[in-house]
Length: 242
Length: 257
Image 1 (cartoon, chains in turn red, purple):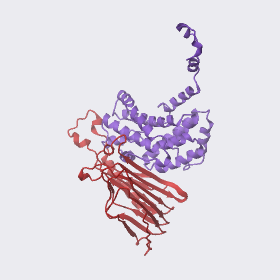
Image 2: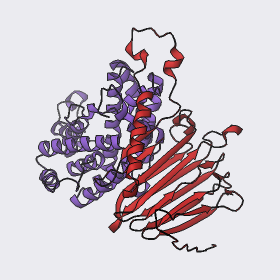
Image 3: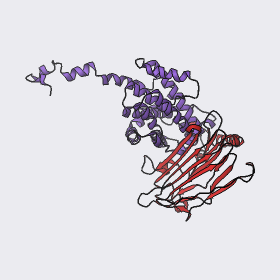
Image 4: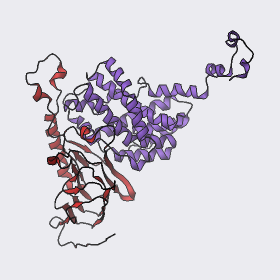
């Protein structure tokens, strides 16, 4: 197993100094059987961003091997860590698993975007991968669980993944946590509520005797579905999903 | 073959009380337990399950479900998710129905149910169930004492989530873990189908027919997801989770969730 270490020193105050880190994979994708593990420590008062150069492509699984990525991050007091990668795209028959564990203190701030697409849909691959699992855990001081989430999508279950997704091609989860992001949380909650209130309505067929002249329009699904929930200890720490 | 029947004519056999018949008449301990089990799964138990649609109302308003076929797929996805996400909690609390384990499961589930709508529904159903169970099963004083400890200690210590409370109750009443986990899948299916009738997706007779048609799938999913460790709890229907959480944006609604 190859190992390496990078240390970046803080240059200025955290409101002006943010370190951007791009994670690049050799060859541009993750091949069957690859295992990548990363550990991050964001010091007190520091701001760091981890992102990618392009979408993470997971190639087809050879011999049922699973590829995996593991991230462990420790975020200090008054620090902000933003994990904002491009989405993961699993090719047909791919098997992929990722686990991201974040350890925060009471005044850490965190932005996590975890998203994945249906595959190479131009090539007709829509939700055609074998296995996708993504785990995101946030623990506060004393290993207290704040947020525990695992999404598991496997072919060969009760329904095909494609059916479960109802023609939607991307799933995204955004976590916005911590005191530095209060204004963002409020804005996101506001926007999602506004957007979805327009999208959701009692379909007119339900009303029975009112004839519809334009049936297709009334029954088309929203192009985009989102919801926003508050989680964690009594302070508002929204998570948006779409 | 019962020895007491030897040498008797067929007519006389009927007059003899065999051990087997005696058992059926008096009822074994298992039979008494069945009455408790039926009561726990009966929709007439006042736990407020009828107030929740498990995301179905939002799914209808997002035009993801419009008729009985969509409904069937929806229920399968819901049961699959219930199995993968919640059965580990039911299993653990049934196998180990102690105060300490229950509090631990409740804390973990609270961090797991980030979906605010689903979380509140779980808390509402769990609180009602424990209140009713403590009042009903008076022969099990620990139900009431555990509840009193947690109600008394103020908010935040225990949220009274449904799955751990359901498993805890079954465990203390003496229901085995297999029946307990199946029972949880059953009440979920029961409540979503009931919601479907009130949302006019299916009529009461159609609902009854559907429920029986879905029994094999529900059983298969129960077997697939039962007896798993907590670390494996995962959600398998992210779209359903998103849609359920959007229930709060519905302008007109029949259900709490």
